[in-house]
Image 1: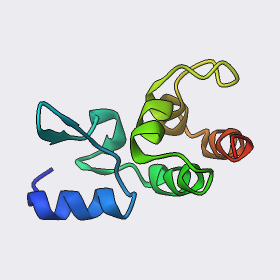
Image 2: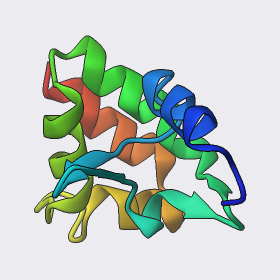
Image 3: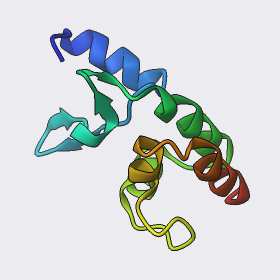
Image 4: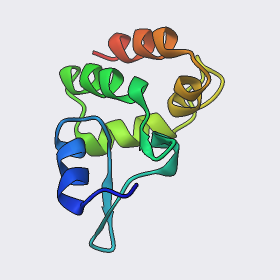
Length: 94
């Protein structure tokens, strides 16, 4: 992304990105990026999940797991322009 590690951590803290530590290294799934920048649709949906009581790790898992009502993963649906549908489902989880 061409950003400092501090900047990446701030993007994660502000929920513009989600990441997880793997073998002690903070990693962000490539699907959460578009043109080396955070996927804009990710932020609002991450906030909705946080408000629903999801931890960052749980939200990360939800974005990457198959969601039956979407027929795909939530992150794939966001990337396909289905933001409203994904957020409706996220709100229903509360």
